[in-house]
Length: 186
Image 1 (spheres, one colour):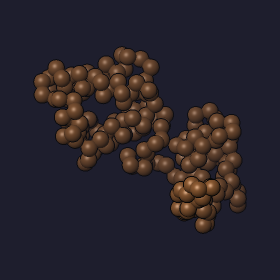
Image 2 (image 1 turned 30 degrees about the vertical axis):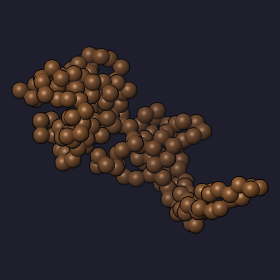
Image 3 (image 1 turned 135 degrees about the vertical axis):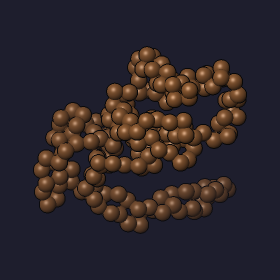
Image 4 (image 1 turned 45 degrees about the horizontal axis):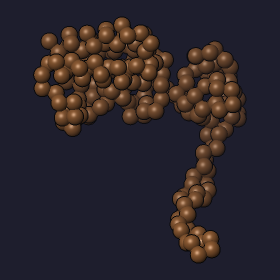
């Protein structure tokens, strides 16, 4: 899995997958899954920076100024083995395919996991999705005023739209997910 973005040609981004094609002393060539392009990754610099607060005076005005100071760096080929990744480590990344074990132990974890996949076709649930996997904080429940089945239906529909709308292009896919959630609840 790639750990950086290609800001020049947009061939890959943080979270892109591929297969190692060639290994050399100073680089790794990867065949990207999405566009079948060969890309060679050399060492990438990650700066270690401290934030420095200083006083700045211009004329009669004195104010605080926040700047960054480089105190070190580390170098690494920006790839990591990605056979499996936790929900926490996947935050901020989007994947074409997700094999999901829908076990969660904290509020919102299932949302994070489900919102990583680009389309419903790319989602594979390893275990059946169960009601106990849908952990929601009391604050969220209070916000949506869950009490009647009608408000619950509205919540499921709205959450489904919010979670999947940016990734799914067909309203039927969203409706299928909602229908599935209703089956679980029975």
